[in-house]
Image 1 (cartoon, rainbow, N blue to C red):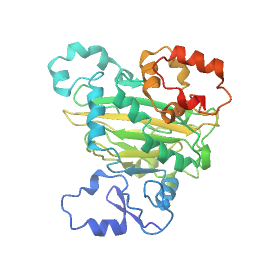
Image 2 (image 1 turned 90 degrees about the vertical axis):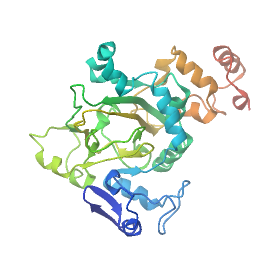
Image 3 (image 1 turned 60 degrees about the horizontal axis):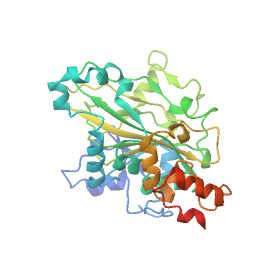
Length: 338
């Protein structure tokens, strides 16, 4: 079995810790959990070469960080798209009046899919992310339930601190069940470094909450002071991905830096067959030209993640093929004609 230990505020494989001890440039503090992406020691292998023991750790602890899952080129392209929504910190400091509305409410710094940028849309529906979710849920019938970009700026009067909470209230009509395809998968994709003073996400390992009811989903500090003693920060580098369950209590911590910005993409995936789950029904955005553009350039697999009928679905016949071609004239419908 994987032998994980806490090193300060970091959960890491004991053997991996020894093997990395010689490397003075390896910063253990930045990682919430260190993973062996070469398959680890024994156990079944995933499509990404991970040991299945990693998934067992996700179920036991509730969260895991995948270091460097996103390539540098993917991060650079995504950040270029983000400039369509967010100013650089230096620009914001120089002309804060221009962005007064952006800074007026925290929610103004959050934007939902579809995005005005192909790189962000592709990242939200990335095949590598989809394969991870497929393995975690044990089904290839999965749906992207939510995708949102979020910027948080240091030095503008808001520290963004939250109380501990679980995200399920807006994602299911019932209470989370974290096994099989009942599980929902939350992911935070880091597009900038997150240091200790840039408000790292803090999570409480499941062993400290599993024996308690999940309802209510909020845990204020004055009523649950012990939980705050068990929370663990996730310090990350651009390209790292945090994966956590819908039952995990977590929060945004204060930003104490005087300058800087953290940029993230937040995703939620679920199994397609559970209609009682889900944050978004993407047909709600059907009139959005960004969604139309994305659907016409997307792969069959990417469209399926949004609930678009798959090839072979009973929906497809001569009439619907002709009508969909009129709605999306640049869409290649060859796969749906088989």
